[in-house]
Image (cartoon, rainbow, N blue to C red):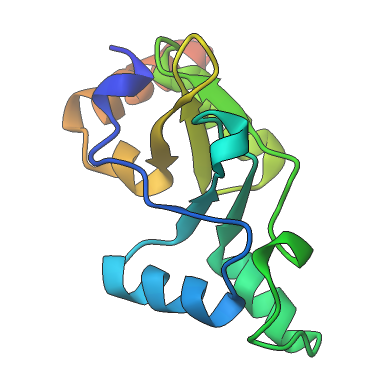
Length: 141
């Protein structure tokens, strides 16, 4: 299985000139936890993300809802290629303490977003993780 099999829908994108309030509306309307920031100048590549955490942090620190996303979006992206194994995606999420990953095509353009929830929806994957974990446990004699 590859990461691409876990991506359930097209990524929801937003431009860097959008405001926090506009982004919040999209998050609520689409019932998602992250927006990918793209612009025509990046040629279909993700340049940043705005997560629910980013939005809450901005509001908590007094950032105005009319502020542009460029001032609060996360620019250091954690990415995975769509052809990678799901175990690599899980590892990246755990190492970086995040719940979403940007998924790229081989040419670096945006393919989708992978959420931790996507793993829970895939029964076969959960079973394979359980088998891997079981094989790591030493036998008791």
